[in-house]
Length: 574
Image (cartoon, rainbow, N blue to C red; front, side, top):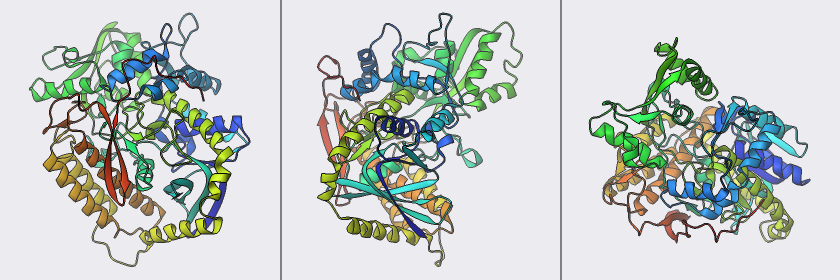
């Protein structure tokens, strides 16, 4: 493999919503050299690849950022940081306006105002949201974009980041990135558990199957403090298509009903976790299958819902049409979809899992910043919140650049840094050695990992439940699989990518199991149920954090800030 060295002021890992907006904000506020590295291609990568039909974090008329903070903290059952939430809530509407300026079509009402869906959502025609973001980034002269390059490891010395290493997904090139500051915006993690759909449909997930938790894994291995990994996210989705339910529930007023026609959602609670738990409980009680049903809809209303799903999850519209349901709807009819929970995901945009950061999105590693799904403590951020975090991280990185030269002088010199980077690349290049015969493949080890997590760490087959004995068994098997992964070999760069994605997931599984065991309560019953500790307790009102020290996961419990009152929270701007 050929080695290429690149120097930049700010290295941004991941070209999703957070990474793209961080690059835009940094470029427009400075003359810094910015390098944006993406594993796929910036035009269609990340959670926005297929488009969306609404911006789910917006401050509606008559509401305040503090209202959003209270909503998000309540929805997270108290495990969310109001200081982080408040730092982005005031920026939501500005990011939406910025997207409109890039050409995004935002639907308007009769008065010409943004068409709201509830008090915290606005409707959009968002099939092309990612190409619009990509076009804006690529037009900035201060930004360089490197597509189809997988970043594998940070370069850290004396708890200060000096860059990263990676390789091309398609060519025989390995990279050494030297950077004064690094922003991680690589996304959350899918694929840790067996998915709802198997075989040829295993890619039909709620979250992008290519998001493997790489940013989490790099941070864990580098000794960064992580938070709330145990707050997994289980999405309530349309069965078979994994299409979102919010479009039908909020856009058409659909209600959750069981097989008896009873509306059951309100009796279980209104939080995201408890809405998912209600469906699980009804199925366990023999009152399933459960459905979302929107009654008394006009033909035009049904067509609007069909169009809305075409902007985000066209499979659901096709499913309705294939079933001949409402294909030629009468003037007044109903629209429904069977619903179920997905496998668990680790994602900081909906839950609170990720890097432990401050309001400037600084991680516990000097010079490393986090934004979007990898930034912890700040759930319910969605697209506009990820972009807001990107803008904050960009401002912080620019501030850090002013001090970075002195900081870097205390660390390794250029020659030493290159030797460390090359040694790491040489060690990992062994995976491309195809001389030895293999007894197993990356796909086989991945299936074993997913089966283990599903059975013993709260997957679908165990109805999101686990106990201490099962977690111990899962940990032992994950460690065995990690050791076996050292023996994997790849014939080409795509095969090498598969090996790294497996190893990233295994690192995250190990930390996740430690977090699940450390939170000795059941706080989010729809996301996970700890059978040894089935109640939600006052002792559980804390953040469960972790740090890898000498290859061991150390658990850190941190006290909650006051989350019922935001009057003492200082609002900051980027």
